[in-house]
Length: 332
Image 1 (cartoon, helix red, strand yellow):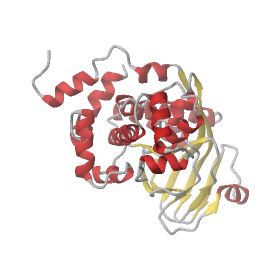
Image 2: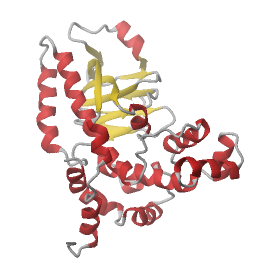
Image 3: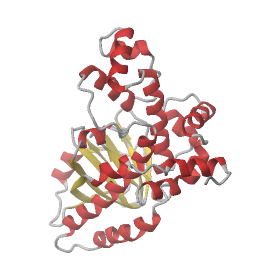
């Protein structure tokens, strides 16, 4: 029985499906983290990580910093934030924009890690501690799962409504960081698995609701390339013509083959992709709706709000307010 409140009814409907692709997929996928180092950094500091085909993450244990990925807007990170670069983008981590930056390889060469894999670097200012590493997914369709993620995924524990589980886990991370006991690196990796799994799960709820959690490949390289362009460059003002030019096809051929592979037009898929990313950002990141609109290719808040409400039945603000109920119910 519905409650009579459109927003509450919409949330109930979102959570009424017996089949939950997100839970089913993530239950079959195992996150395997590799912790590269625990970085203890004093301002001013900065280092660059070159791009590589390895998913990377940074967890801010203490302090704050900026992440600047190649070709993307800077992202401010605070204590408790987890940031994932699923595509292995090259990026800079820095205490403040403008601080000097050293390549990570050179930095480690000049400041070797100690026996506990700790990196100490920087000046005499405020301290920031980062847990840095990479990860891979085991199980069914890991590549397809990672492909659903944006170039940068930030999990904000407060915005994600996950403090009940993050607080004790984060306390364990901080406790390990305060000590230099044997086996700390293995413990860090296990705890990172928890953070990463929750971040993936939380974000993918929005992707699944937008119909983007398609785990079967299309087996058409050029169609897959179009899907990748839409995911990785959602803010670009794509047209059918510009997408067709990118993959060397005519508009009519692209439209026909894309519909045959996915069941929808490229422009419809673009709209769903943008809204799925917007839902993910609303769920995980402490970003304004205006910032989310810019990241996802909408000219302003009004344009995003209109499209979002048409797709999800509620406004972005209402979705953000009820996201805790959506997340909790869909992943049980």
